[in-house]
Length: 423
Image 1 (cartoon, helix red, strand yellow):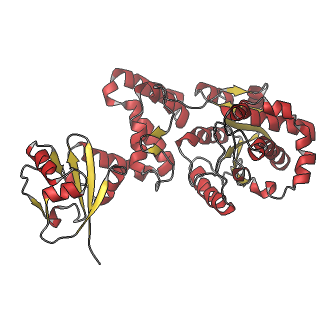
Image 2: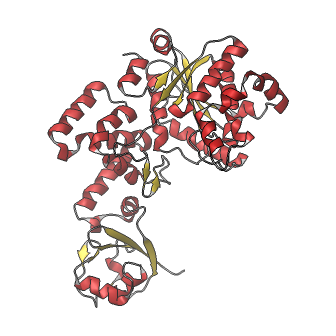
Image 3: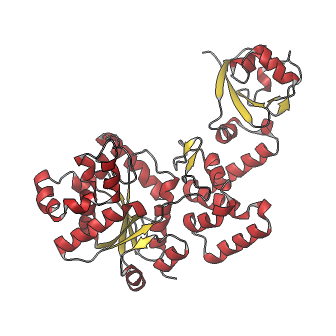
């Protein structure tokens, strides 16, 4: 299977310009995808294009990842209802460094024959004068055609409208394609389907300025079968940076994938071959309760992003948590599995804390009397031990590692209470 066939089988081809299939079958080419450095980390919404670049390299083609250090100072209006807040030079540069580390998990920058490249478009865009840009680039674009683009039309129809800054974004991205065509012989740009207008603008500029032929291929924007936006949870975006989204939370995001999406996501976000995915699909149909596809999806994507150790830690923590063995977990494990639950602190007291006072001060109960009522009703657990005595005093040595209490109210509401020692 050639690259186009691979992407097509995986459902990754939303649209492509004429001739792309034949080009990828007969030649080894150079292609690029741009990455927006507007945040300190990429998120799971970026994984589709990251795996697409990975497939490209695995099929012998040369991938270029372009960090938008220059365009990131402007902001892409595609898919946005309001103008982005402009970032500082320092912030864009710092964010770009984080993106490099995350891309290294998917691309081989040291490959002997077709190494991946990482470039920053700030290297050429920040040296481009306004007069040069208007003369050499702007004169090749019709304002009428730019106004007809969906991303611009939506913004023009909004109350805020669109600034000249964002209106010029597609011209800058088109110029990127020309620079990469000149420097690396890059003839294909890939991206999400919302980038189609920007991609074709670059192709047209290459034709006008260089008389060359370039191509575009766009991937679908991922949605869930339930109609919600992919990668969004109640806690917010799922980031690739382990400091922003804990690896356990990352693993659980994939493990909790809807049955209707699991096989599709295996095709989208992993490098498993057709035979292995077919086996997982069949196993999931035969034993849906065992969640074969979701388990492999969680393992594969977490390994790609965080490594084997993160998978082992996540699965070990899951066994303890769902096995009712919270008391045996370490503080590190607990902070991984409960990253977003309410937490509070209490000052170390050698003789301990009256349970009703601890529950009310931690926000588990609205008052001491409410805490006593919850205990009498059998609805309070501390470190998975049901509390039955409303006059109980919890001692510091009952805390996990002497640092942490896990309080559960009812079946699902968890709270963390950390013990702090005064200096």
